[in-house]
Length: 240
Ligand code: ADP
Ligand code: MG
Image (cartoon, rainbow, N blue to C red; front, side, top):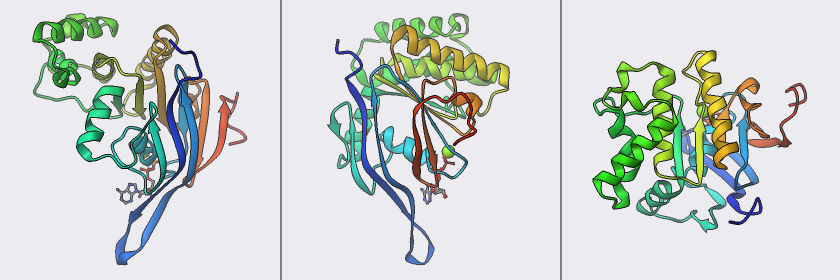
């Protein structure tokens, strides 16, 4: 396996605009440039409205930029169709969202098996792998539960097990502790750190809080759609 030189995410002069009323446009991202290498744990931080989720949607192949080039794992995805983007997402990325995004009528086990649906694996193999992931997040005894029978922290652990089930190169988390109290939030953040350190999974986490960002080792700080800091995690956020 190649070491840290392997580039997972390459954002090159990325701009994003949205149409607004009266035929105008609002530019949200301005010439965003950064690379993320394999095994990094990066926090993208900025105040509300700074463009973090817009950036995450592009990184996660949920949306395409207005201009610029975005390469995910060496593949230019800028001009892919919606179907091609869906395949790239399923193959490379595990998503963790603030509101968990679990299917409420499906069991914990079904939820974790979801990313494996398109992999052409036999059912027994999907079940085996989903159980392994649930054990990894400490929820092996909850596979028959429905999401609303679980606490917020447990729901987020199910979402992490689901993200891991597809064996992604990258975990993308948008405000993953935003709906949790600080104790459960810290548990989730420790867990991310462990996944990054022990399994070498690349993690990009979006947050507006420095206390959360600082679990990562690199900080990309965005303000008004522009990067104003990209480097080693600082000790404090005084200078951001
Ligand atoms: P953050 O996640 O940092 O809070 P967002 O990326 O969600 O910021 O939003 C940044 C700006 O882009 C906001 O002004 C928001 O209104 C605008 N925006 C985001 N998505 C859209 C969209 N689909 N259409 C129009 N404007 C949008
Ligand atoms: Mg957001």
